[in-house]
Image (cartoon, rainbow, N blue to C red):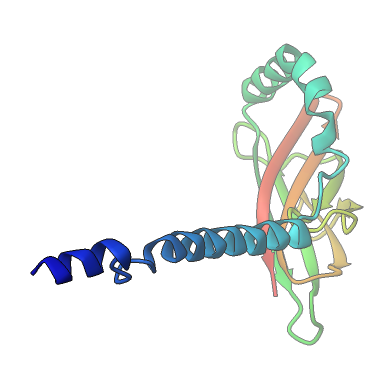
Length: 173
């Protein structure tokens, strides 16, 4: 019995020497996964678009924007935007904007412009004037989108009675 005790004191038990290596392995895996996630984040980041970079300046004019929204609401105009895709051409079709007075009658004589913004790919944005087409109060243009997917459309209609702005999102195939 004393020989066994002496043998243990001279030669320590080696059964749990893997525990420090388990800690080392765990932290190597954590650092590796974090490194991969950082690389993916930097590789897929498209950056800040020019319009979003001006958020501070836009915030300074916040009260003016609220006043413009109140003035637009006071007009009582009704509007809708739609994209009717051309089945024969990819990403092409007609962008139409319907504008009506508060009583529901068509609003004619407006200068209408549509700004089309790609939320995920800066540099693909473009503007197009919408001209009177078809029924009174309808303004349209034939357009071809450079990329399929989601697009933000900001339509601004200037009229002698006031200005109307509509923001919407379209999906282009």
